[in-house]
Image: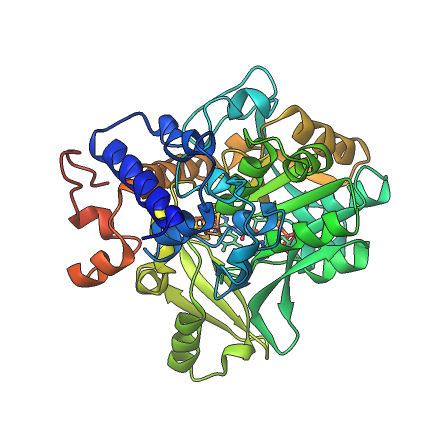
Length: 421
Ligand SMILES: Cc1cc2nc3c(=O)[nH]c(=O)nc-3n(C[C@H](O)[C@H](O)[C@H](O)COP(=O)(O)OP(=O)(O)OC[C@H]3O[C@@H](n4cnc5c(N)ncnc54)[C@H](O)[C@@H]3O)c2cc1C
Ligand code: SF4
Ligand code: SF4
């Protein structure tokens, strides 16, 4: 066994001892950070064994975009350690992975939440409204009220950002998401709407940094929001982390129960007797509304859709993008976006658009079920053990239960009491 292997195994042992001994999860980071002072270890090996090989990787791409020597590629919604000999032992990849440990406690202070901070169970926020874009094109093409795209376009046009990290699709298949660094209003508009398969938006952060496109806004699902935050506020203050902190003033988080796999979209297409590329939109509104290329809408019951959820989404505890500047969703609404303004920065961007009269706005209480649903769904996702304490994918397969929605109805983590919803 070589020295690197010995170090990896000692870090893994320390990490697992901490998990077994119920140590405060905020201490877990020290299982590898303390090794740094002993000369370092090739952290990429630890990340691959604990997160990727166990099937727990949620695909947020934070390890990829923080790595200063470009060790990783991104393939099949996870990192591959293609050039691991290039690893310089900086340990950034393990430091930023939201599956290995929860975001640091002081993140809440660092993010600059707008005072007074309210917390009703869907993350800290200052105020929330229901809004929709007055711009017809944004409203028509947007998934809900088109608020997200309109906010980005406005920020681009008034110069407060010069680029937006968002999600696009393959031209030949609108259900295959790809990352996009948008620098024009047209590009932002072309990417609006939601894909319910995983879209690796944040891979575009690298392109932005390499081309020095800044300031930047990022749109992402909650796992991606956490990945961005872990990079911005990593305790390992290398230039790459500082770049993200300095140059990403706006992170818009999309509420998210789960995403769906491509195989599952293909099964749904088969069930509907259409090609997967002919599914142009999937929207979840208490039921699942599938829009086909020819304009037809097919409805599926939400519970029939549950088995199609992406298995890795089990390892995610955040519904409402609690660490975003602005959280958005279409929960309980039709043609409107629920907007939760969380931070000072989020307020600056949103208020600037409101001042320019870009949105129709309703109070949240005008649709009471929106907020109550948001609280309920956030709680359902939080009511699970931390991902490090959950069974691996292989263990779930052996248990015969890879169902994301129902796993914690049947499963009781050892010594953790009843976690059922
Ligand atoms: C996988 C997924 C699951 C979701 N689940 C819920 C939910 O359970 N409850 C809820 O209330 N809302 C959910 N949403 C959010 C909702 O679908 C809308 O994105 C949100 O309400 C904003 O609408 P809008 O009209 O303001 O945004 P738009 O103006 O349409 O802009 C949407 C933005 O999202 C980006 N985007 C599209 N697809 C993806 C993707 N797969 N991953 C990351 N970014 C993407 C686009 O590039 C665009 O910038 C989900 C979104 C996704 C992508
Ligand atoms: S969860 Fe994110 S940071 Fe962790 S291994 Fe997967 S892609 Fe990398
Ligand atoms: S459920 Fe979590 S892991 Fe899955 S796509 Fe949504 S935010 Fe990411």
